[in-house]
Image 1 (tube, one colour):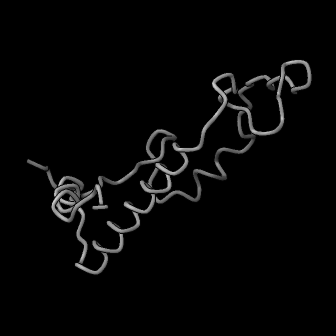
Image 2: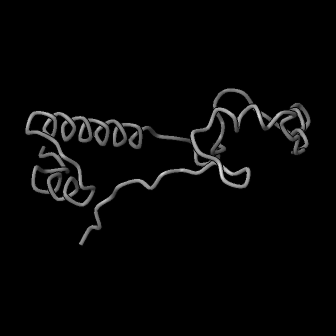
Length: 106
């Protein structure tokens, strides 16, 4: 059986992702991706009862036995100046983040 991710396909994906990999790294990652796809196919081949719930994993979590979600309540940090004092550059109480160098892809 041939690998679904051939070296040509992998090299195309590496170019799209703008990655720099040497030959040894590229072949290792390509083999690992193919192994993961193989494992997924093996899992897909396991026969399941059509009535099985998607999230069924041995323990049912019905609303009757599950904890209710906690309230999403905003709680401001009591001493924001402590945090801002650790930041290299602040402007109007906002953290200034430097630009990230990037290359425009064609």
